[in-house]
Structure formats: structure tokens, C-alpha cells
Image (cartoon, rainbow, N blue to C red; front, side, top):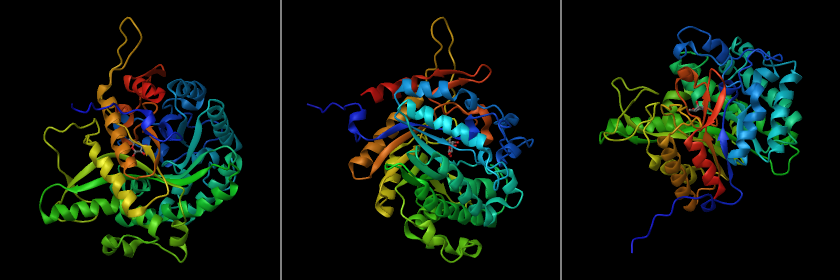
Length: 453
Ligand code: FCB
């Protein structure tokens, strides 16, 4: 008899697994000028004509700043035991450094207390791309005072919340900050310099290294854990050529290893040293700080990359091969869960992290709100299938020894998708922006049912 394929269930995962969703401050909060919040590079960037789709900004976003209580009530209804959010640096230090704005801390204290009161563990990211504009005006991540300012910011936040936050994530996706923000210029601060990208890379890693001991020493929760979140991709050659092979090696190095090697091995990857060493502003002792042990590595994963070389091959320049018949999300990202399994295996084999948290995974599809007679509904079978496929891929890697202990679906709510504005919906909860109504999508109900076991 054929063995029936049993549907994946919560009980296949460890009992103490963190299940939830992830968001980021600028993408959901709105209230951009309330309670003493300073401006961030994303306020500046989104208000610059031509930088975001339709000129969208995060001024209002999901208005989560005012609606966090209802949002958390919905998380509870959906059965999550954890929630990953980010703290807006310019709410805490409107000028980036110096005077702490206690109203900013008050907001996150209310948020954290409400989560805990609802049985949801807070996982706080300190930096999800909203650098105070005042620091950018002095050079931002290109300069060494920014990691020093980050250390002070981490201190201010963890003094207040160090008795309550379960998970601390220093940075979200430094690769995107460094390269999309400083080399490609599609994100804030919108620069176009390879050298700036490499300087930012090192200063972001240094910020992480400086903040970790501060967070640990301000911590007053026995079971708290500390780490960093990286964007990842599984890179494969797009064809049999030597050039495609080299392009894949480059993609792997600039996405994964340029951060993982310093964090786990205390050195930058030698495969790209000819491209980066001349620009890296490393000073004595930096790499030791960066390589201090992590309690977990946060993995954000969306797609694999089938890399092809371009003419005039240089760092960060490549093409991707599209696969005939494959499914692509609205971001034009290939749906291919096997790459997720491969990436997790690779991370576990090459870096042996103590623990892995999937801090983001999810998909944008063109959702339609159906109002009809009955309940409003969003039928999004593609998103549900994406999630199922990736849960299965993670489970396979887990069973083969990858120490995966948490999964945060991106995202709880539809939100401001950076340069794409509100045109791309990643939520498992639909947001009707004109009314700010929240409507749980079918994928959200599927997740809820999965969590009930
Ligand atoms: C990641 C970001 C997150 C979101 C998703 C789609 O790179 O961390 O804020 O934009 O992509």
C-alpha cells in the first residue's frame, strides 16, 4: 500500500517552538510625527518624488501605533505564541544620539506589556532600516560613529525593556541596508557607491558587535536570547557555464557569507577579498566583537537565485534565469521551497549555529477583498501553498539536524513594502487602507488551524 502523505502539523515541530509573524516599525506604525518621533531616512526617501511606487510613504501605514491593542488581540485569536516587531530608533532618539525620548520608549513598553498579557513572547528587532535622518546627515552607516550611536540606542532600549523582551535581534538584513541602500540605491538612503556599501557592511556588523554585550548586560530575563537576522538566498548557477558558476559564487558571497563569515568565523570571505578588502574600514578588535557567540541566527528567506553572469562582470552584478513553468510571486520571486531546505542545510553545515529562527518567510500575491453578502473574505490559496511548502522544507532540514526553533511568517498585516509602497501585499491579514479594517485572509485561517494542531 502506498504510504499516505500526512499533512504537516504543529506537533511535527518541537513543543517549545516560537510561532508567529513578523513586522517592521516603518512598514506598519504610521504616526510618523507623533510623541516626539524624529525623522528617519525612510521618511526622507519616501517623500522624495520618484523613489517609491505612486509616491507612497509610511506616514500612516497600518496606523498600528494607535491600533496595536486590536492587532495584538487578533494575534491572540490566531493562536501565535510569539511576535517579531521592530523598534523605531527615531522614536527613542529623535536626533540619533543624545536625549532619549521617553514617550517613544513608553509606546514599546505598552506594546510589549500587551503582548505579554496576551501570552505572546516579544521578539524585538532594534534596526529594521529606519536610521535617524540626523545620523544620515553626518554620513550614516558609512561612518564609525553610527555603530557607536547604535550601542547607545541599544542601551536605552534594553534598560527599559530588558526585563520583558524574550528575543533581541540587533539588525534586520544588513545586506539590504548596505547594498540596496548604498550601492543599488533602490532603498534609503539611495546611494550609488560600491565603496559606501562595503563601509556600511562593516559598520553594520560592528554595530551588532557593540550592541550584543550591552543587551546581554541589561537583560533581566533568564530565558532571553540574542542574535541577528540576515537575508539569505540559495544561489545556484543558471546554466552549465563557468561564468554562471562564478556568478552563483558571487551571489552566495555577497548575500550570505559576507555577513555569516565575520559573525561565525571572525573574518570576511576570502573568495571576494580582491573586491572588498580595500574598502573595509576594519580596526583592531572589530572582528572579535563581531564574532562573539550568538544565541541564534535569524534567517529571512524568500527565494533561490539561479545566477547568470552579465557582460563586464563585477561585484553585485548578475542576471537571474527564469524557470519555464515555475510559479512566481508578485515580487517576481520564484516559488521553490527546496532552495529553503538547501539554504538551511548549508547554514547548518558551514556555520553550526546554536539555534536558527526563521525570522521572515512569506509571499506577495495579488489579493482581492470579496465583500458579497456574507463575511468579507480574501481567498489566497497561493500564499497558503507557499507557506505549507516552506514549512515542510524547514521541517525536513530540522529533522536532518538544523536546530530550527521558531518561524515568523512575513507578514502579519499587509504593509508599506518599501520602494513598492502599498502595491505588494504580504500579510496573512488583509488591510483595507481607506478604512484600516483588518480581514484575516484564508492563509491566516490556515495558519490558525495549523497551530491548533
Ligand atoms: C525583507 C524585509 C521585510 C519585507 C520583506 C518582503 O527583505 O526584511 O521588511 O520587506 O523583505
